[in-house]
Image (cartoon, rainbow, N blue to C red; front, side, top):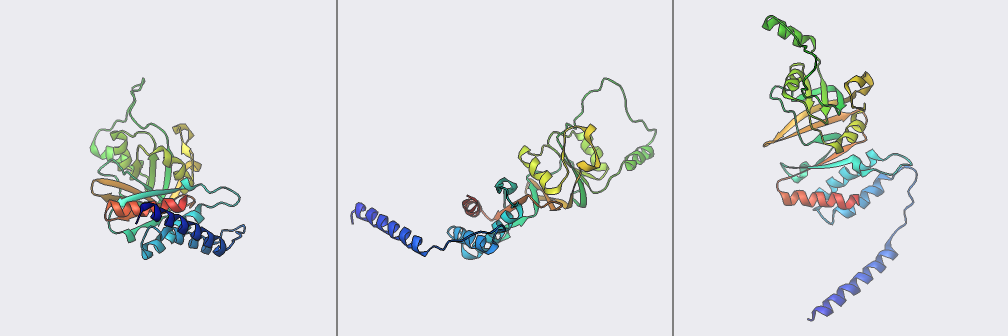
Length: 266
């Protein structure tokens, strides 16, 4: 059969399909509140073109819940508030919606805590690296007991610092001894999401520190995957920023799931 005949057949089928859709479609009037069932039907129809039924239905709930959580009345939906992360780990069915953020890095100190609950969180854009002072000053102690007492006196539990700039090794050591989890070099694109997720505000100077600057999260923990580290910030105060965490045993599966999510978002 000549290729031109095949092409003409596809064009005829396309026209017939579009005509059928025009007759078959049902107009939907959305009220002031989004209709979750309608959104799920739209998402399911889209996602099932890319994935098998069971995974498509699971992903339908994930993407619809994510969109509804960031939906604010009379405001345009900002899909940037839903981050998409992927891990080559476990199975595609382990893909889930994280009510909070997943950062693709962890702490840089071997003695720093890996998990904390009911945490106050400070988001900062301050250099915590050593700069030579023009004035000679320091802490002095005569024995090891006095040094440990000095460290204990500044002990703060369940406190997390996420800094966009650097934190030098001596500062990391002091923070670790005080029981504080500290992450440095946080990506700029995450700073707005971080504040929206757990409250507080970004501090640009240590002179601006007040209790109102602090946010809160129910759980912060570090996850190791081979040589990679991830930090999960979950159970947040203001659930307006979420992460769709895509998992799969290989790159092909991950790419399929990510493609399905992006098609629905568009």
